[in-house]
Length: 181
Image (cartoon, rainbow, N blue to C red; front, side):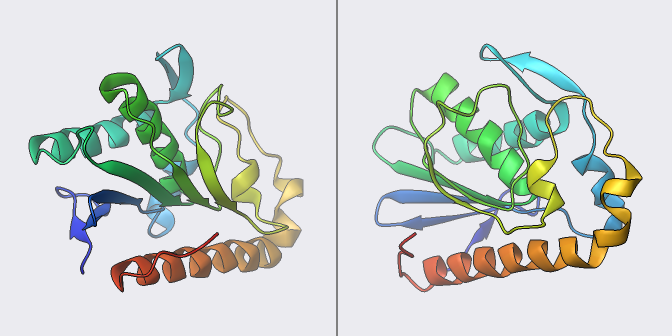
């Protein structure tokens, strides 16, 4: 089984036994890191969500709905790493609000994305001590340089551990094995 690209994005999906797995990729390279700290928000489904994450999740929903992959007969599992985890959270909110489906979440080193995450169905949330991405807030906030400048190597090591855990999960899914969390 192979992961299929969603439109022109880096995100992918996989169909396995009437379950739709949606993988939301994280940032790729330094040029996309500016999106991680973009703090503009909009109101959607009685919450404040990050604007860029909402737009990206909207593209995913449009592509999957056009391919008739989102409907009540299928279970949907949404997964994401780093900023993709934030997109995955917004995607789960959109699926719950527009399609009335609950999509379990598997998050790896995900930043927070909304005012209300308590009503999301998070099955797995992997993060490692020292990873600053998991502490990036959804609201307008500037992280002081002193908080991360001298610890950048430690931060990246922790973030890379989560990246390897996410890659292992994706590999197991494509091999047809459901990874227990």
